[in-house]
Length: 244
Image 1 (cartoon, one colour):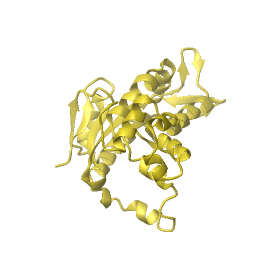
Image 2 (tube, rainbow, N blue to C red; image 1 turned 90 degrees about the vertical axis):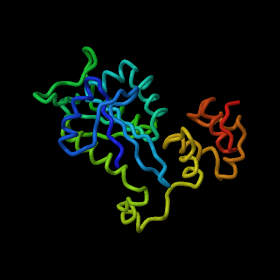
Image 3 (spheres, one colour; image 1 turned 30 degrees about the horizontal axis):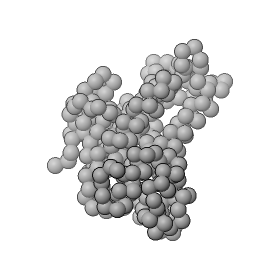
Image 4 (cartoon, rainbow, N blue to C red; image 1 turned 90 degrees about the horizontal axis):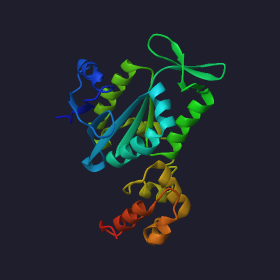
């Protein structure tokens, strides 16, 4: 039986329960500390992976960035709670004289923080920064209907066996087995390491042998790896999991 799609019971999330059920999803309300939606997916070798989705309408996205709530609490909480954390940005936007406008569902309105208007460059820059410098996977939808469809189909994708996803095989048939270095591929599997940190690790060491035999002090020098993460990685590579 497929794992249920959990919908946070707070306002802003629970309104999607009915449309999710209408699409046939096995969804139910729950109290989530982080994220608006969550489920358990099937990873490599059948490993259960917690999946989480933080949903932001465009105006809320801008406001939470300005207040620091998104980057200081919500993103760290999502990354530490879920193996695969998504940030879903919901809403249709357009450019008007360099400024970003979004459709509220009734009319076009400027995206703004207080009295300040958000430019298109600022909006797109913020999204790209989060995409490249955090472990969040960014998804953009046009509105509630598209969000609901994405949730139902993405949860269904995660219920399939890892080896059952075949689209990438034909798409990469004419390419080399991987454009990523072996160090990056191995480091991406380590606890607490995502896309950005894996790149930093690949820049730090040329071979897996160098990475595995690195000292704790060496790990502390990797960009984006702090004291706690460095200790976890050092111990994980040696088969121990206790903090120093």
